[in-house]
Picture 1: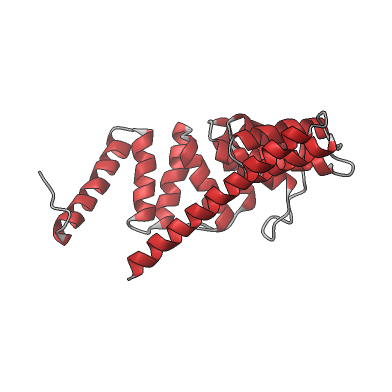
Picture 2: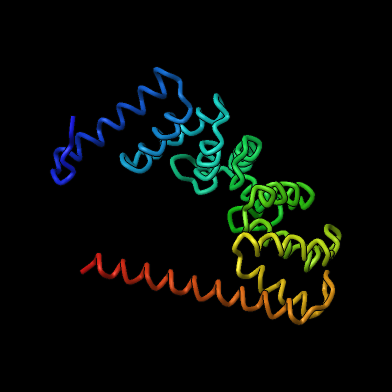
Length: 233
């Protein structure tokens, strides 16, 4: 059946059919990807966060579907669709990370090494945190590589020794993955000879790379702002 997406009733029918399709794929055929799509459908279309949370949790527990683990962990972290539970959030970030979701590794790692207003009760565990952040970095999560580099640049009293060689390696990977702040750090390291042999030419090269990324970011934000303004007209 062809749907005319300009007609409101056809759009509604199409969306309702999606829900039926995802439910069938999840509950009747036992497809983990369909279950995750059902969770997204309940979240994004129906705005039924409680049911979405249950679907994500079940799909994580029963099928180890990484993105469902990540979504359910986020729900617990934010108190969305369920009571806020930081221990549950951490547990499901670990499940998501083990299943191969690198955003889960990042968030789980951050919970180990940082304090937030909702996470003050959790004692810091830099050993586990660095393990999770390193796994996220290995999975090409640029922010995770940059965050680890910052830890080694500063060091942490009685926990992590300052190590500019490691800081350089993580910064270089983050820069290559598109993190402009890491590129700026690389420029400074080459200029000072921190963690790498001093090289003014290399320093200028990475400074230019960071500035080019900054200009691209500004252009992108300006374009998005213009598009948003046009839609409101």
